[in-house]
Image 1: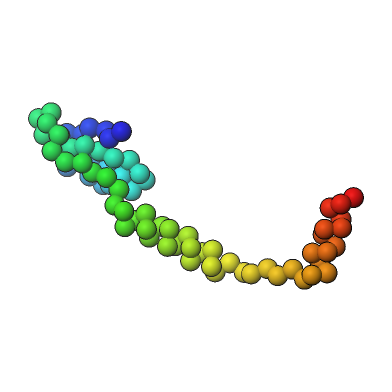
Image 2: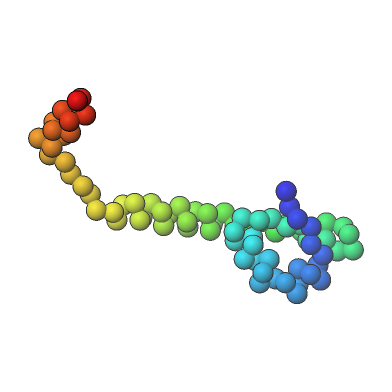
Length: 79
């Protein structure tokens, strides 16, 4: 649910509000009690985070296990 914030507070606390929006919060900016704008996280930042996560996964070292090691692991698990 969006938190309501007056236009004056939005102006004076903009850097703090932007940090909170970046963290996922949403705000409805009001002027004299009337809602005039919604401030929501940008979709592009979510896409950028997902892209970075995929790049990190692809950059991880690949571990290979030989057939003999697999067979040994299977046998040790059956005891």
